[in-house]
Image (tube, rainbow, N blue to C red):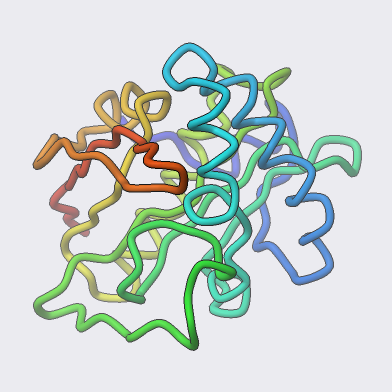
Amino acid sequence: MKRDPSSLNQMHGRLRPATLSDVPALEELIPLSVRVLHAPYYSAAQMAAAMGPVFGVDRQLISDGTYFIVENDGAIIGSGGWSKRASLYGADSARMGEDAMLDPVKDPARIRAFFIHPDWSRRGIGRAILTACESAIIAANFTKAELVATLAGEPLYLACGYVETERYEVPMSAGLTLPVVRMSKRLVP
C-alpha cells in the first residue's frame, strides 16, 4: 500500500516543492548526507570526488518544479525529485546548457538526487518523497521511471519496487570510480 506523502506532515515535517531560495540549505545537506550515509559503501576519496559531478544541487529540477524538500521546524531534512529531462544524475555544475526533454510516450522519467539528513534517516522521509515523485510522474503521463542508485540508496528503491537493470561504475577524477546501480519501475495510474 502506498503511503500518502501528506501523511509526512503528521510524522516529521512538511513536504513541498523546492525553490531556488532553498539552494544554500541544500548545499549544506548534500555533503552531510553523503559523508555520513554513504560512508559504509564508499571511501572518503570516492565521496569527495563525487561531490559536484555526481552529488550536488541541480537547479534545473528546481526550476522545473520537480524537486521536493521536507522541512522540520524550518530546516531541510530531506530532498529528492524526478525529471522529465535526459540526465540520470549529477549536479547542474557538471552539465553544459539545458538538459534535453524526454518523451513520456517512449522514455522513462528519471528519479533524481535523494539526500536525507543523517539524523532523520530510516524514518520514511525518502519513501514519502519517492511516493510524491511517482504520483507526479504518472500525472505527467510517464509510465516508467528509472534511476541510478548509489549503493546506500539501493535498499530503499528495492523496497519500493524498483528492479536492477545494470551495475556499473561512474568514472571520476584521479582514476576513481563510483559503483552504482541502474534501476527501473513500471508505474500504473
